Image 1 (cartoon, one colour):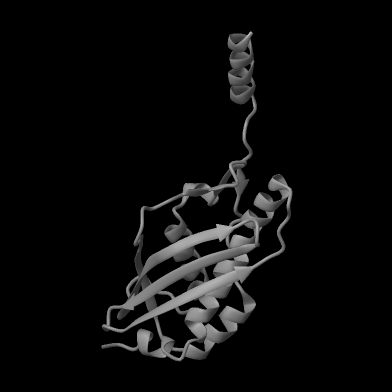
Image 2 (cartoon, one colour):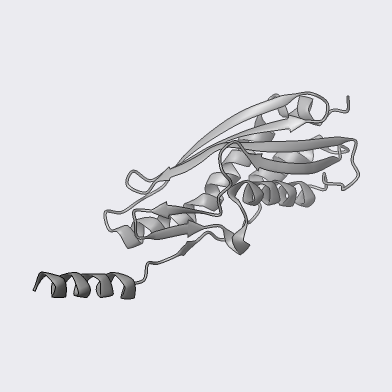
Length: 180
């Protein structure tokens, strides 16, 4: 009887699929573009973004399923592309610019229970300057795992918009983009 129960449990576990929660592709922030346009005349190149920890393309949410970035990007790749998109829309991006910004994703995690993304990034300039920013983005969560994990995935894009906003609105941003 115990053997039969174990077999049924294993079959049930293998047949029940977990959900995957996909993060939306990044959409630029009007506020970030407005701020970036104040640096009119500057041109920036964005180099590599790496991770201080192991690179990830997904993070498990409550054992229900993974939260995945679009197109299999790493989280640091998602942030890099978002930054490039913002700079392009503000007409500040150039593949051959005098200043190159690179980034390190110092940490990224979330709590689907309390409804919070925690992201820390350090931006380094080819001129020797650097800037570290932390975003603790709060969102509405749910007790129900399926709903909470979906809301967590949907909250990453605005969390990254806020992260980039903190970078470009920082008083130190102008020192990052000045030629050496």
